[in-house]
Length: 205
Image (cartoon, rainbow, N blue to C red; front, top):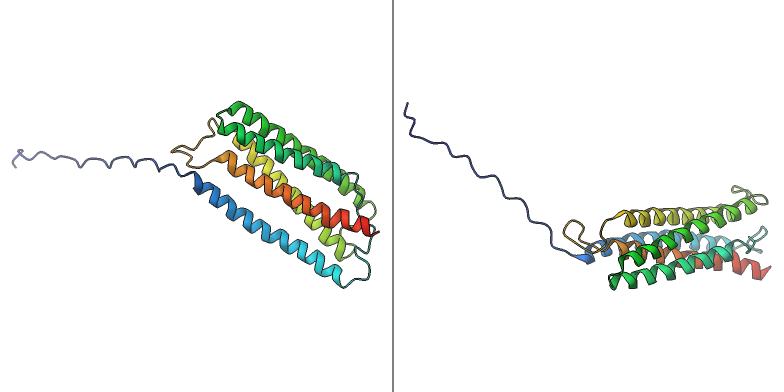
């Protein structure tokens, strides 16, 4: 057999080039998440309104007190403002300051969780979660929102753990901004929650 034939292996496929940086891709996905969550809270607020529409007195039980809800709302509003300031600092390439702002927002979220636990404990002492339709809707709405705050805190911790925050080939989106708009959404939802579930029933009584 002739040995003149030399086998030449086919060249290995070239490594796929990195994806182009598209910092709007992750933001669009986050807006889709926010839209789905907005539908959830719209359904909860709608059920609260629809159930109370046909009741002579709503809520039928004593309204929740404000001495925990108002400080929690103040903390959330401040945390949203601080996170927005952090975004402005990030645009100026002040990464350390931006991360410090996010750390403050995380502390604000933890403060909100603490006030929410205290508020729930106080309210549960006079109204069980399965007492009536009002208590079911009230606790469902507040607990789901607290779960969203916990998720927001976890996402901010993830962003703080990243080495770099600017869009690049390995992460073609803006993680800081994407988490920030989720947090802003959570702040707005809690503002509506306090108005409809706390302040309005308190004023009517």
